[in-house]
Image (cartoon, rainbow, N blue to C red; front, side, top):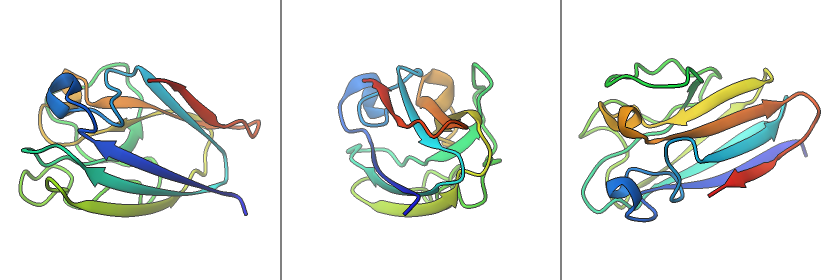
Length: 137
């Protein structure tokens, strides 16, 4: 039963103009999962006006206006993540599945152009010691 099931909501609050994950943005939350675990993320978009996406990317410390989707784990990105019409639209949801196969520090980002650059990202860490949890917002 080495599984982690997360519910992540884009635009859960009006923080950063609804460009947040569960109310967190600019790295002020960190999710840690154990290495080797199967991860399921139920992704909901509660933003009343804007499409959003979710991908697990290398953590670079900052993000440019365009973050090309290069998920660090196979399957760790939502459908059509850079598209304003093909990503997860307001009121919609999507589920992704992947294995956190390598320990390290990563980031959960929105790939819609400009979103990660202004702060729509949080930390996503994979621990080698089996630790897990959520810190921050």
